Image 1 (cartoon, one colour):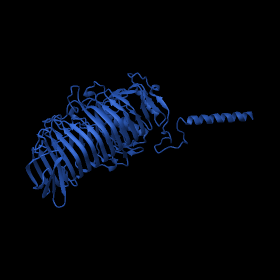
Image 2: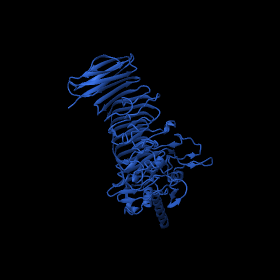
Image 3: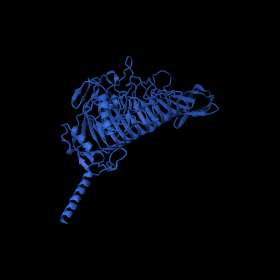
Image 4: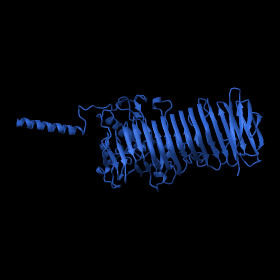
Length: 592
């Protein structure tokens, strides 16, 4: 009997140990989720563990190995990792040192928590085909510097210099491809030719945070990412965050695998809030879906340059022209891989420029410029955006369903060597794009480029501009008016330009092909003063004046009008063609 009791007791102890050990890892009988992970391992834990368990916390010693271990330990929701002391990551160009952030990782900063990174040509942190990431209150200082040439004679792997591919290429083809094969069940079948992780370009690979493939549920809030206060433009952060298309989990790739949404995915379901950048080239760049950016602030910015502020853009201008936001996609690719459902709101781009524009004009090649927002998108919206970048405000790429509203921007066309407008339409077609309540100011003494570029492609559909106001100091360009040409079908345009030197005001109303342009010089008047009114129309055969002038007028002409009291008065010109009308309203302002 005693022997039986001892046996039962021993069996109970063994069973209890199995239960305890079972909680520390997977067992053959534990159900697995669709990613191949044990079910429930990504359930968030309330446990908080300090980075001090893995690192020196000196702020000067190399903590890369310890941080890598700490992030791996925190994965799958095991605990929240707290960075509460200074950490130094020595990554440089060593492709073995980029830190992969795996499923269900939560990292928060507190107190003296700070990470210093120095990645060059390769990412510091990588999120690849990975879900459920939360990064809170990060404090990140960049202490590196991107060379002006890509040709550095190879790369570094595990501390050893390797002659061969450049660092970004080696990271993509060796480190990233290898990690995806080992951790995401991806087979790169090279029997019919070379095949690797999807290449997104050298610029994107320079990011501090490199987010790629079918990654989702990513939350980043309260982050500060900056360079030291005294850092020159040659030491700025090359890219803060990059996003890219990459192969999905559990796929087999061959050289001829098509780039489509069935095999490839892109980052989605992401939220970035309360982010401060100071000392960047590129803020966010790449291709993504279902993403929200709110309460974003950017201070200093620049372009790749040497220590003397020269060789802007790098040797042969290899670095992509940088922007705070640069979201583009290939318009003839699978629509499943288009940018879509992106919201950007409450942005302040202070425009503190370090360095000069990359394109000098004359015999210099044309590459681009570092304007604030460059966006091509489907079903996207930008609200409450402020920019003071001298490089410019906006490039609109191919889009369908894009709305930008309540934005104000100033730029300096002279800083751009009079090569570019502050707002361009450089792509082939636009559909269902709306711009409302926009103010654009060119601070140059004289403007020779129209502040808004043309969008006159015949294939355009439904371009809407409502309450778009532009202010210049003086117009010195070709043509009598600095207005853009907007073409296509279904246009609904309302533009209002002020030219300070001559006190001129120009308004244009356009509905489809019907266009009315009205100008008053001056539009700033004392009581009893006169103004010269000039007007022209397109596709209209009759016009009627209203407001401060009245009567039937021709479809073009010039007239001097005396205004008894300009306050609360306006010149109105309504023109039609039998099938529709358009009206331009030009307010008259009393002078002091």
